[in-house]
Length: 495
Image (cartoon, rainbow, N blue to C red; front, top):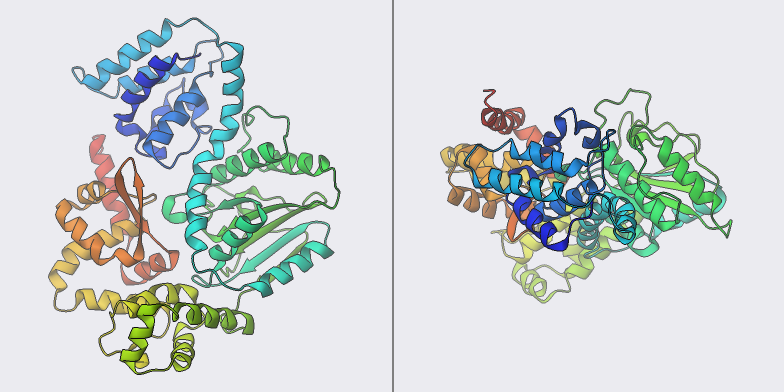
């Protein structure tokens, strides 16, 4: 069903006002009716409201039920019924539905061709944009890791397929390493990001399958129904991509970051995370990063594991290089002079304090540069990343226990459990605090948060998973999960 541009823009403008497009989960909740539920699992994901509206419209435009009826008007009817009579949005949705149903049946050839190609692009477009921002951030100040690249290249050169697993504790630089590989080598890739709720098997299969189809020009106009129900279609794409190689020495490499953050809800114990295949076609390789886990749920035929040890020679050399480069900044020259410490002694002392963890340096070096350590000595610096988090927590609470417990702790803990980046207004609604209190609190926690602008509004999330680990040790986060859940239950009258 081809929408004329003017009608498309009217439809887009109205849907942008609908709260159901504020998140992927809210939109999927519309698709629970008997007529729409078949399309629920195939909806493209998106990083913003505007992207979600565009992706949904394009996805539904040519979809029909088994009886031939177009799906878009049915969706608009279902959405309309969520609003009360007299609500302007309800009237606008009804007007749009009526106008769309009056359109000539059947798109023109050019439009049909565009729509056939759209789903493949839309399935991963929003994720690619999220990953582009992540990759750019992780590459800031990147140094070294040649010892990892050398071992990876040796594996690729001596095996005709297989898994290369990079294992390390939070903060040691796994995501930065993967970002470097993707940026420099252009691998097909997927980043699991728990704080953005990019962690489901469906997201992964949609994203990676779409990349493989586009990259290797596979003969698919859209992802088949059921493509994300198991690992069969991914395996098929990998096999077809391998078969289409003109140069049999060409390697097809799939890079997956943070396998430990992938959601295993609904998967049997024996099933590999993300439905990854146990064996790969010749010429196909998968690079995976993960925390050390007792059971990573990755049972594969050929694999090699590289442990990123914090005290290894290669890691400590990279830590040293990172500190040396940072200390060349003008403000750091001034700070070291005030501390009365030589660059050599500072580098050696901070390397020991870091315990081989890059995330420690990401937080501590700017704090030193900004003069946040009062005594100005190496002894004042905390030992390790968790100690740095504990120091900040303690400083915010000391002498201010009541406000910390009522305001600062709930706000950062809400951010710790939120499944996607959230706004000041959302946090204030869930915690029943004033938006001014939320803004002030975000300022105080700012170094541990990441902000992204979506439609001109700031959305916040925890920057690194290690800080979420810290929060779990400090506080029972279940009650903050319940706080969000109870709000939505109240909205639908179930509480």
